[in-house]
Image (cartoon, rainbow, N blue to C red; front, side, top):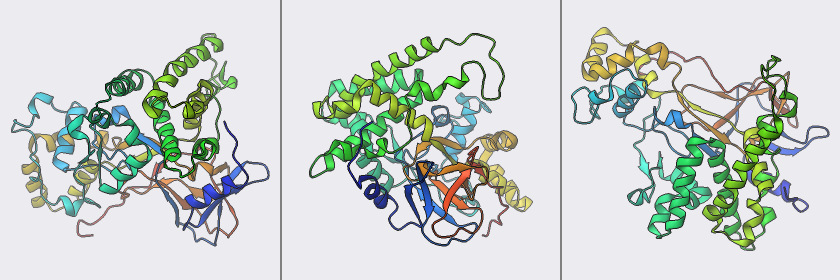
Length: 414
């Protein structure tokens, strides 16, 4: 990965953390780290960061509609219920079509605003939805940010509007063949490289080294070394021996072949095969970008609004529960009868976060990456576990696990 000039790293992170109570700086032994810039009390949210690149898991898309940028669940709630009951095979899809009485009509459920901590925004389609793009957002803000960062270069609708048939075909191949049949990391790599290209093209004096700071400053190794490090040749992560002999050379060759196939495709899609941007799309660079994603990505998670609504419904008087049940019909009844299963079904994805990625790990953490069940979106959050002194380095647990705090019982009136 390319090096950068003196002070470039400091300026880059200073812009990212402007107005925050944290800063990124070098440590004596651990590379970069995240530090507090002032005294901070325990249980304080000190970081709430938007992703550089992210995606909702493919399997999760079948269950929930969510914003392509922040993963906020999209409404209306009734349609979310219709979608989820089919995805979980609780009712046959033939009985939940828009023309069937079994489905819940939008606007028919009572007390939605009262029982949910936040309103569910209606889907805001990409500006090129009529040209074939099916990406949706929760707000104009998320749509604009995503467009500026990477979506403008990855939008199949925009390619259609421009009459760029070759790019349309390549994007469809990326989404259908590579993404669904191989690895989600490929599409994340496309987003990250599109972000770098967007930065490069927005510069008054284009500088590729400065443009690629988002990827050159994060920890990285070649993709095949990250997904199967050398120490795992004979044992899995729990120390159990494999029952077969692992062929590392064949494993690396297969993964390298995937990257070799992807590199020219992404160069054409993201950079229009611009020779000035060719260094971003070498096999080595792409392998490191994908390895960077594997090493630095964290979970994005939002509690299911369907589960929240049904859970809060249980706290209502019997008369109100009956009113909701009558309005929800077979769909609501099927979901209410599967609450244990619904408790494990949330909006989920992965994201790379430029500031959060510099948080080192410790057996004695002083911050945690935790999501409150009332958080409206999937942005990464850091919360202090104790009082923090100015200048103190921030650490998360060695086994970082993005978890939900216990779902608090709220009065519907709150």
